[in-house]
Length: 146
Image (cartoon, rainbow, N blue to C red; front, side, top):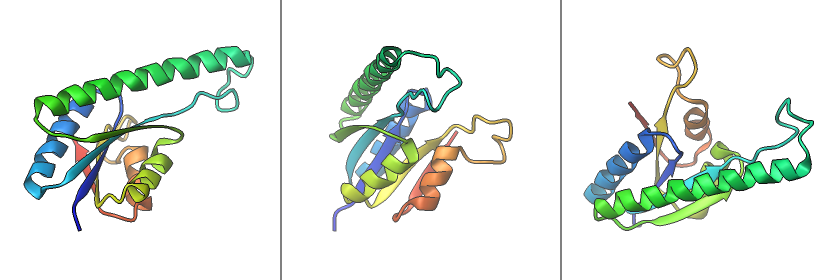
């Protein structure tokens, strides 16, 4: 069975470091890399801005998709610089759910995910996405925390 590492990234500064770490790990394991980015949809239901017109919501979602494409372009440049090939997946949905589902669909054997710890208890708690992925995943999860 060949090893396959899923590396979910976002638009944070940590993403580049995470990709370099994942590439190094993949090289040591002789593993394939699958990079993914999840665009979380903007919804009138999910915000106090329910007075937004539907076309405004669509415009915001299109902007989020554009940012997602830029995130993946940067990831491709980073891994090309590292001399590593990978496949790239962008999905629309809720990050933790999509990460776990993609790991299963792609036959991944490890998830390497970053943790930003944005909340005030950041030094004591993992980020909500990385924590949920670690809890729900069917495979090992390596949490890259800076």
